[in-house]
Image (cartoon, rainbow, N blue to C red; front, top):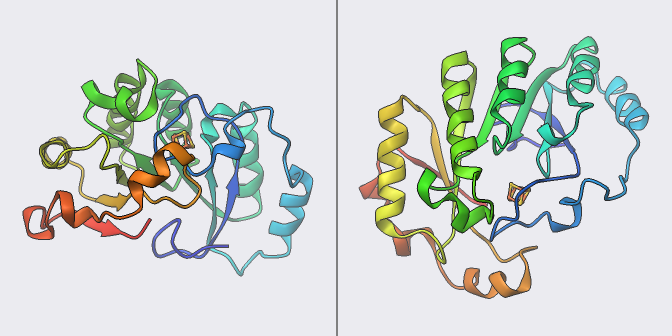
Amino acid sequence: MSTVDWPGKLVAVVFLQGCPWRCTYCHNEAILDPRAPGVMPWADVMSFLQRRRGLLDGVVFSGGEPTISLALPRAIDQVRELGFQVGLHTGGPWPRRLTALLSQGVIDWVGLDIKHLPEKYRDVTGAASSGAAAWKSLQAVLESGVDFEARTTVDPTVHTRDDVLELAHRLRALGVRKHVLQEARPDGAAAHHADAFLNWRLTDIVAPEELPTVARRAA
Ligand code: SF4
């Protein structure tokens, strides 16, 4: 249950296992393997939600990367049948899957990770084609007209001040109205990265007055 995963809404968050990327700051390592055992069967999620009809605004599918799951569209339908709005946290690794969901009108809000400039995406995700995929997904989200925010977790080992300023500039130029920066934090990050996240602050890289239109959120 959360009030921060979909700003302004009280939601249940469903974490789906599996992700094609391996981000430097990831704190969900335990569920990156799509074969990782689940802790709650889908039937139990549905009965949990049944008991909270009228009490929650919606359900956010998160991960891992939720669009990796081929069962996601049916799960979304079932949640909507209970009367909940649906939010989606995604990094956009599969633009066609995201476009299909958006064109069906079954997503009410998207939290889209834009992790870096497209040409430098691999520095964060370790995956060569991740930048092209994520920025195509951004185009799909913009074209769909769905309510969304773009989120960037700033990692002092891969993002420079110029990167952050350029990223904010490019997103604004594309028409992104809500862009949120958050700090990579050591909690849950792989040990070889966590040390780098111990004693730094976003303000060490870019001062708030340099990006007055970009929000900042605690990670
Ligand atoms: S996309 Fe998200 S879940 Fe996947 S590795 Fe990156 S931070 Fe972790």
